[in-house]
Amino acid sequence: MSEPHAAQSSALNDFMDGLVRRNPGQDEFHQAVHEVACDLLPFIAEHEKYRDAMLLERMTEPDRIVSFRVCWTDDDNCVQVNRGWRVQFNNAIGPYKGGLRFDPEVTESVLKFLGFEQCFKNALTGLPIGGAKGGANFDPKQHSDTEIMRFCQALMNTLVHYVGPNQDIPAGDIGVGQREIGYLFGQYRSLTREFVGALTGKGVSFGGSELRTEATGFGVLYFVKDMAERLDRDLDGARVAISGAGNVACHAARKAIELGAKVVTLSDSKGMMHGRDGLDAEQLATAQRMKGEHRCSIEQVADELGWRYHEGAKPWGVECDIALPCATQNELDGDDAKRLLDNGCWLVAEGANMPCTAEAVEAFQQDDAMSYAPGKAANAGGVAVSGLERAQNAQHLVWTRDRVDEELQRIMREIHDRCVRHGGNGDGRPVNYRKGANIAGFEKLADAMLAQGVL
Image 1 (spheres, rainbow, N blue to C red):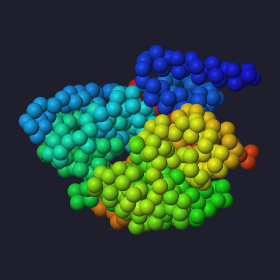
Image 2 (cartoon, rainbow, N blue to C red):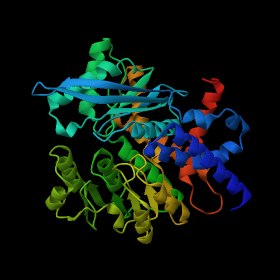
Image 3 (spheres, one colour):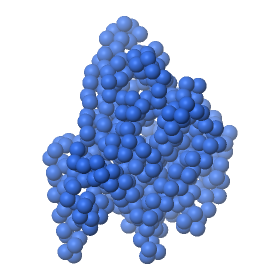
Image 4 (cartoon, rainbow, N blue to C red):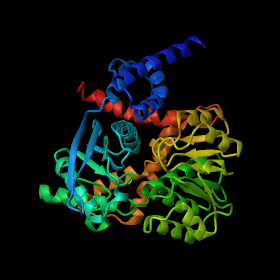
């Protein structure tokens, strides 16, 4: 190992040792920070103003973590107890902004990883929003609509003290859709007697934005389109493997079909369905309706559409040109990455947050024929339109769907250009989108923190 590389490796090990010591047992958070630190520590070493101000060390410590009890009564009038969190990571460039996740497996480590990623993602959009994340160990799938309402109201009874349109603006995430946001917003409005943009992801009938539901999935394809154009590739006829069958996956599939690509897979936690000829718009609508409205399994969807179902399988073993992991963190590992590369896949863009393991990312970045984009860049469309919803609320205006879509495309194009600017190699190799996203997000956040002093 050369002397510069040895010094960089030593600096990374020292940094991570300190982070792990301060945050024991938080594997997801360690992984997210390690991925960023790999790119940023060499960059920071070349910039004295960032190094001396200990900016990365400051960025990896949340401003605050609020953990609280959530008590509510179920339909049998029995008292239930859950735990809620809000991790407010950094508000140097604007009010905290980030989703709420309702999942029985949610932990502080997961929320810290998501909040840390959110800081960089939000900075990349160019919008004045900081980074946060929150949620509760509550599973909406196991409860009635009235139980979900009472839980959301109980959660907001405490959360109301920490959120607001100029303080912290939560949104949806896994387990938190328009229904949950509606209940949360209704309780916020009741408690504060204010109708303001304190949450995003609201229904269009009460202050929400057009295209918010589609934004993350559509944004992924807008980013992929820019990546492909830079490679002089065409999406028309490209085979696209997508994991998941929820909001992001289905809207990514919809936009891929509109752009002429062939969507050859969808999946859930129990297996995946595969069709060589790809979904058409009508089949996708059927799949979306069965999964969303009737909570059918992918096996049932495959049976309905006449597709092949593979129990226990993931999409990454099929022949494809483009892979879009849109389900959950660490769903695509090193072996999956090797299968994708062996099958000729030339582009991977993350629709979920950190869905690729460190081993998978390393495999992608070592292959000159592969272009890989991290979630903080590729899936920023959701928070981008959340930021646009906040702007509409502040102006007391409702923008048209076309205007929101134009703004979304502009923001995703600018994110792509920022990644290219900081991650371009200039040697004929693919753009290092991870490095570009990390450095571009860091610079915006770091300059704001420097300007405001040591806080």
